[in-house]
View 1 (cartoon, helix red, strand yellow):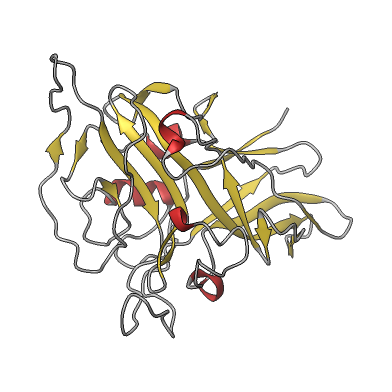
View 2 (tube, rainbow, N blue to C red):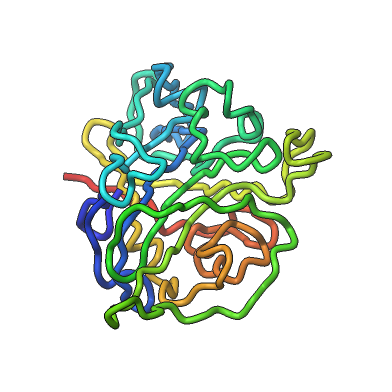
Amino acid sequence: MNVGDKPAVCGQSYPGVGSAGTEVSFTDLRFYVSNIRLVNAQGQEVPLELAQDGVWQYQNVALLDFEDGSAGCSEGGNTALNSVVKGSVPAGRYTAVAFDLGVPFALNHADVAVAPSPLNIQALWWNWQGGYKFMRVDMLTGAPGAAIEMSAPAPTMDMSATAPASQGEMAEGGTPAPTAWFIHLGSTGCQSNDRAAPPAAPCSNPNLVSARLDGFDPSKSVIVADLASLLQPVPLDQNTPEPPGCMSGPMDPDCPTLFSSFGLDLTTGAAVGTQQLFRLQNP
């Protein structure tokens, strides 16, 4: 995961992010990918058979983890890192890769307490009803700081829309205090009797990001998740008071521009546009 051409890591700050050129640092950097396919020369999609390693990959889902539990990432983080997906496809010539950012419905509403790794991480789970946080990127805007509690409630369909407030309250000594800005991407509109029960039918807003990258060479191409590109149009200097950032709710006023960068329709949760997060890097 990068911010432009720089690796996104805990304990560093990155100036010039978002539409207002905001300085950010990170307190979490994790996301799930699933349904990975390679596209052959005939245009056919061939599923990547993931290696079932018991840690990072389960069935057709893989976790990419770029936080190391240090600095601001110590709250809810860990030292283990993973930046690769391992799998196999039949021999052949492949020219593109396609995948989803997120967890498919069949696996999205498991009990995190007994789910197999990597679906057993409490920090990436809302509840049985809401399912998993497909992507968790927790940021502090302004001066980098120590770890803070970064939990936030699961999104609901009736999140109140309050006017964005400018960030930058003054800390003691006249220095602008860092402000949290979350990206918690996940499904919304999930119906069940209560939050402790999984839904029987798919959520109304799946919010699965669809990516296809042409020019992919399995022997040398690297897929880069570029947060600078994703956040380029997002005003990180503004934030509604609670919860901070985008929790994926269709009425969340911090979500429209971000969802457009994900290629998602905020109202329906459908993938309707071109995502701006992932790109290819070919040596």
